[in-house]
Image: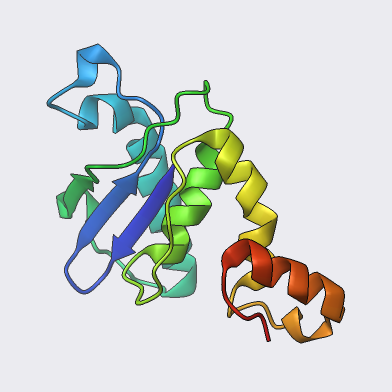
Length: 142
């Protein structure tokens, strides 16, 4: 589960790849009620340490359960991978493919990590590894 906080617009977005139970359909807050209460209390305590006197009532912020999230059908085993993928593309100009099949996701995780433009150690990779990665992703790895 990934929380995205927008302090300017006063919004909390929830990205959760785990399936929504039938009894929660139409009202996502029912699934996350306890989790959000614990989150709010801890977040408010942390903000009061960081900014003494902070008294923003985040219970009044807009809550959004993001739609069109790829569901984790493998009993939670792929949720972490999916959340990492969504973190990398949230309001980003980088185009990243969200892998929907857990096996494909796991196979491509290391390749995506090594070939990412944000990988500062990419220049240290041996030339034969760069050539191999270039063939896999279909573009030149510098």
